Length: 250
Picture 1 (cartoon, rainbow, N blue to C red):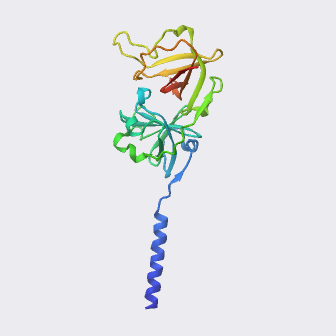
Picture 2: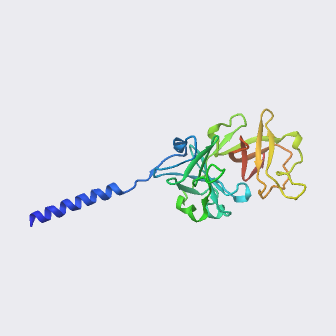
Picture 3: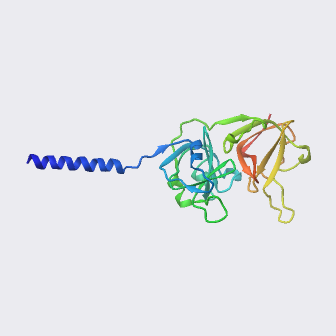
């Protein structure tokens, strides 16, 4: 009888150890750490890791299309999503956890991208709408707002890419005075993606406005203003993309 009890005890111990070894352990990491996975081409993330941060940009007000940008204190990452209602799924400024295992990662210059395996010309494909919540989990609010870095045009750096910044004392360059936020195609009458140029008296900042932006047909104030948004990449250059109509007079 003692032998049987001993055998069962050892069996339970072995099974228990096996179970411990089979458990996948998810590790938290920073957005900055994700750069360690980036290679010369798009690659899959094999490790069971996640990053936590805030949604600092999505399709609210049409300022971004089929994308959500999540940032923590170390940087930001764009996740391409095949959905037209990202704001309803992942609201602006909400806190989220991005589970990265199985997603593909790439960089566009200094811009970090996550998505699914590329099948065409894009660095990553969009995550299907049915799988969004498999990878990005809304978290309880901690009542802490996303970090907004105060910058000047001259102090913008690569590390600001896909993070929230605010820049004071900007004026539209003289050549563009009286312009709307977005140009209008004379043939179709539709707005088009537009680059506007602002100056602080010394340096020039390029601001990109999406054709779908809800205030695309608003006139740009002909006075000193503050712009708040994310640093983005457009046509190979670093630009500012205004988020949540972050336009105010100084």
